[in-house]
Length: 227
Image (cartoon, rainbow, N blue to C red; front, side, top):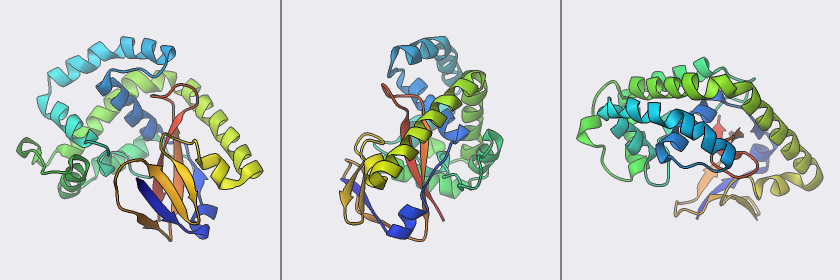
């Protein structure tokens, strides 16, 4: 399993954060999988999937980038920069971080996601710009028109999680936060069920970021760290 060693100070500084970029990325992968988690999402998918497929059909390099960055069990890190936790970022602010990623960093992140070498067709200097352009298309065309409703769902979920923390501590809030996540006791937080080596998280804050796509019921989440 993949688990983190989380000290008390790190857990005490942990936050729930809404990230427009995280929502756009989750929607991007829902479109890429062409699989809906619930009936409401099915209607959204049917409305936007044809245009998304046409976009990728006309741009095979970006289509390959998407498949590679999604990897096997891990998304390339440069597509999901962790929020700072200082206020709610705008989509444009978060997208600028993706767009500014150096090519060498993007190459390395994709190789981690693939657990293998970067496809030669992707060894080009515009990967970050292509990724940012794709995320901007998904945000503008498929997320932004419905953003107020999505944001209300995430806000309600955060309020419920904060209530769980106050009643049962962080362990109560973490155990069903996402598939495979649970508090193991001591200083061990299981992040997923994949076979990754333990990672010590110290001198950082955990950012728990809700997203609405891909699950039945409450929003799913991704966990990130920021120093």
